[in-house]
Image 1 (tube, rainbow, N blue to C red):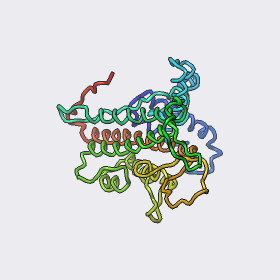
Image 2 (tube, helix red, strand yellow):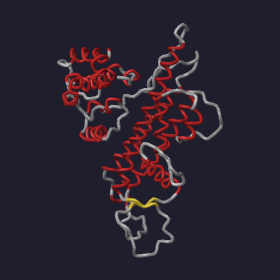
Image 3 (cartoon, rainbow, N blue to C red):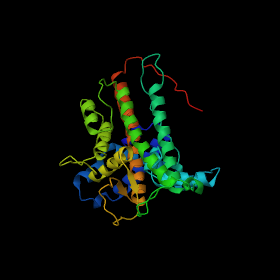
Length: 340
C-alpha cells in the first residue's frame, strides 16, 4: 500500500492495492484467531484497512485474474513469447507488476522516469539518461537469453586452434555471450549512481561507483528509504575478501562482485570438472561451472533490476517531498518527447 503511492502508472498502483487487499482480507476474516494483540488491533481499527476492504469488495467480482488477461496476449512469433515468458518467470522485467505476478501481463518494461521539477528551459536529459540505462539493461538481458538458449553456427567454433587443460573448458559462443551480459550489468549499476549524483546535484570529483562507501558519504544527510535500499544492495555486492565482520543481508552475494572483477581483469575459466593431471602453479584462473555461471548471471540481473527500480522510487520519493515544500509556488513542467 505504501509502494503503490510511488508508481507512476495508476493501473499498476491499483493492482498493487488489489494484491494488498488479497492479503488483508483473510487476516480480517480470521482476526479472532490472531494471537498478536497489536496486529489484531490494527486489523480491527486502522482506517486504511477498512477502506481497503471496502474498495476490494467492490471490485472483487469484476477483477480479471492475471492468468485470464495473459491468455488474451498475442505475440508475432513463438520466439518472442518464449523470451518474454522466461523474463517474467525470472522476474526480469522493469515492471512493478512482475513483482506480484509471473504471468505475461507483466511482460513489458513499463518503468519510466517520473515527472520531475526542473528549471525553465532545461532539457529532459535526466529522463533520457534513464532511458539509456533501461535500454542497456533490456539489451543485456536479451544477450543473456541468447547465451543461455540460442544455437550459434558451428563455424564460429571452428578454426580457432584453442588449448584445453582437459577439464572440459567451455569456449563456446554461448558462454561468451553470458559473460558479456554479466559484465554489462555492473556498468549499469555504476550508471545508476551517476544519474543519482546528477539528479541530486552532488558536487565532488571522487570516482562515482556503486559501492556502499560512496553512497554513505554522499547521501548521509538525505532521508530517502529507497536510497537506503540501494545502499544495502551495494553492501551485498561488495567483495569482502579483505573485510572483517561484514554485516549485510546477503553476505554470499560478494561472489558476484568477485566474478565481475575477474571477468574484467583476470581469466575466468568455465569448466565442469577439476583437472588434477598437472601442477597448477601457473593456473591463475577463476574457475566455475557452467551452471554456477548461469545461476550467478540471473542473480546479478535481479540485483540490477532491483537497483533500477530503487532509482526510480528514490527520485519519485524526492519529487513528492519537493511538491510538499513548493505548494504555493509555480512549478515548471514539460512534456518529455518519446523515442519512436
